[in-house]
Length: 209
Image (cartoon, rainbow, N blue to C red; front, side, top):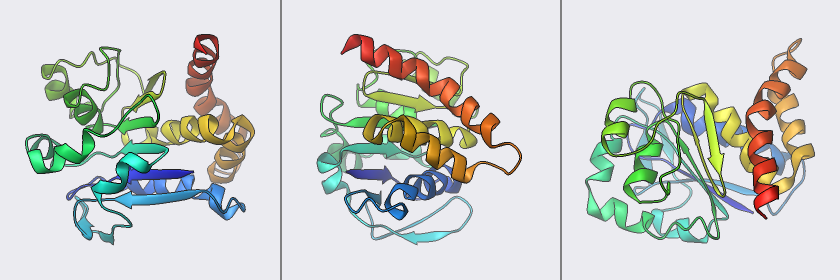
């Protein structure tokens, strides 16, 4: 499985790196076919807090990913108005890929026409201009329908991670990853909260299938 985390300059560290660390747990558990990559338009990107990281792949490889997580950042609207950056994203296809968006990443999914008019989540800072773009924003941390999921708030990345792992590896794997990262003394509560968001969407998916 190939999972790409779309990361632009001035990215939100938590959105991209919490997901990167949590998703990579599957590979550390021994799945040699599980690959998580930072995908960026440049070889290096710098976060909104000044952390510079190397990208693993460019945007041209997104279409081959099994899942794409679109992170948030301070330049999301600038990205949306840059044709050269948006063109590779137009190859994203929820008919054959899982698509997840964090905070202002929801804006990019909306601009690409990939939300299908369904309710979506974003953070409170991004909400005014995400709503202005025509997205139906709901005041929740997580929403998913079909192969598209969105989350609002930096720490809601755990819900996107749980959804992606549950869809790609199954619920047992999602539980195991959540358990590993959960605070000591709060592990079951942490797992229950995350899966409380995710499970209803999986049940809807099963009914639709």
